[in-house]
Amino acid sequence: MDSHQSNATYLTAAGKKKLQDELEFLRTVRAEELAKRLHDAIKQGDLSENADYTAAKEEQSFLLGRMQDLERMLRDAVILDDVKVDKGRVSIGSTVTVVEQGDDLKEVYMIVGKAEADPAKGKISNESPLGAALLGKKLGDTVKLQTPGGATAFKIVKVD
Image (tube, rainbow, N blue to C red; front, side, top):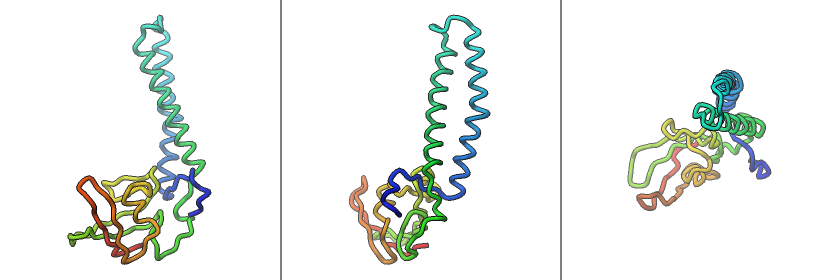
């Protein structure tokens, strides 16, 4: 990974498509719904005491902020399939199998950018404590990190 891409949003092709779909939905369906709500609220008269108008304006602000975030992420997107990786080392896009010290249970994680992180589905961010600790490591390495339950070590048993 190039260090000059600190603003990069690392995405899989599917993750990029998901963000594009969300942005399109917000630009069309949600923006139209909100415009109608604002129009209806304005027709009610006095805006200073109009809770519908106030709520719609707040939602509009949130909507615009989310659209700007999505546009930035898509503009700065680095597709993981296009990233040159050292096949023997953990990088963003790698699937890593680890075993926690003192446990035989294997855990499998895919290292993704924070926009796609979904720990319940085994996708952890490169910025998460475990994701960051695993980056750059190779098969057989052990990483240690501090957790709320104390220090924990994970041994890397597979890197794809």
